[in-house]
Length: 429
Image (cartoon, rainbow, N blue to C red; front, side, top):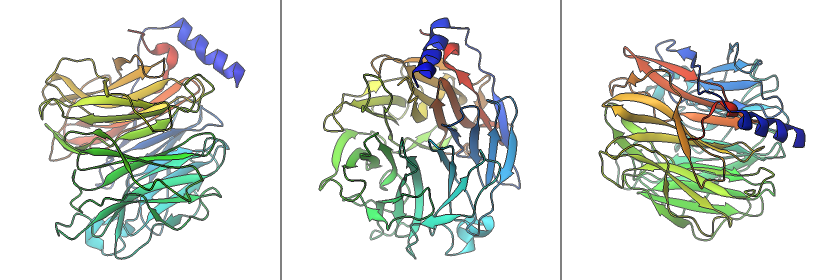
């Protein structure tokens, strides 16, 4: 560990001109747009990077991004909207929604009836038979996010349960549920409800949604989600058995998690939560990033919160993007390199011209006191509401390597891209 930290810090000391080679991982296939991709760096081998791409594709590299290969997951429950993570033993987990027949809501009750998990023990080449959890008919399960224990193969997942997805009925409710697996995804605990104030089922900002967990090295579990323009926080100190008796409202979120962006339509500003488990002075610190429109619907910004006392208190929001007011930055995602403690935030950005979208990376080397930012997309692209780029992007960071992943649109066609960045390639200005 100490030798690896010395190597990583040497990378940063050298410095280099910023050049980020964008790598196309996928195009539209079988008439299904590759939106909402996810990515992870294998903690046992950082040259093994695995991406999940809807409906059921994995794209992986074993040489740090020089070459990529594809594998197809097979599940009786279908696929879609992947969320992918890895553990310290090198296992990779691919979570996806239930969608038998890939027909969406038109195919009946099987759509969104559970959350599905599949495991790879060979870096994304092959995938085991699925396990599932959350099945509670006739209710729908969606907007999930997995986390893994920093030292053990214990998995944690939170998601939204809808009485009926996208229903406009006043009586229809949405709530945040939690489940975990102590044996690497083979079996899952019975779902536990975390949220105490329900939302509606419209799948808009008034729906309680986009929950995320983070786990520290002691096994303490933290969770956040959004509901009606408020970020809520919960935690468990006994491995998920008990949670706070009252959810804590920690910050306003103007516009809510579901905001409208010109040329994009619906975007997602989930309050993304991570914990710094690095062997640095910042160990145990919690970070949240999100976007909101507190400065008006024509000005979307990326914000950052920090807690050094396990969520009891939080800093005032810090604006991350450095552009002039009146532009849009949206769909932020955050990762911490658990070797160095450095923080990385990726997001879509429309600062240069109307409807022209780029991808930016902001990063902090001092625990969130100061953020730098740099453009990482090689060229901008034009988005359209008729064929939207999706709500989510993703990012992973480990051992001095940073891998954002995003969707772009060119001539109405969607594609998924990444770039493999070394810390030495990021400017300090």
